[in-house]
Length: 188
Image (cartoon, rainbow, N blue to C red):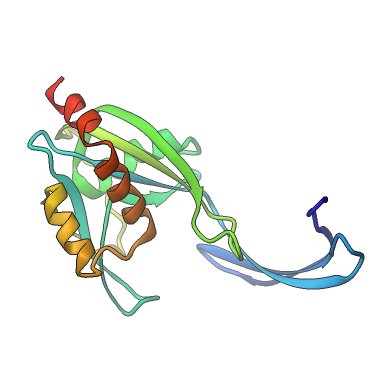
């Protein structure tokens, strides 16, 4: 069976600085029509940055949409400054952590909420972290507090429900499943 829906109408409902919201009228495979609310967002990156003492760099920050502080790995939008996700990861690592990585590799790409949004997240692993010599400007509207956590400490935070950000969850589970590989990168 072909599940493809044919878009037969589009109406832009909102154009913002970060997202656009569109209402689509689609024709279903059975010939009926339906309405789809779509949030368009540029691609994004996230970085599981592991220090030489085998700790993950985690940021605490306020998220207005949730009205609470979150614990998250470094992340950012792929935009006109760097249209390549890898270059964006390098830039965001500098901006948010003031570090650079001797080794950076792609872990995976995944959609954050495929039911209504098209945001594609590219997740990277960064090791061999050292301070940058040329600090890039940080975003004016970001207030971040950096900490480092062992895998066991993240497991405890996760058990308490404090790792509820999806990209951080994926990174946490990747690290938990690939501890030996990550440790091998650190130990060279």
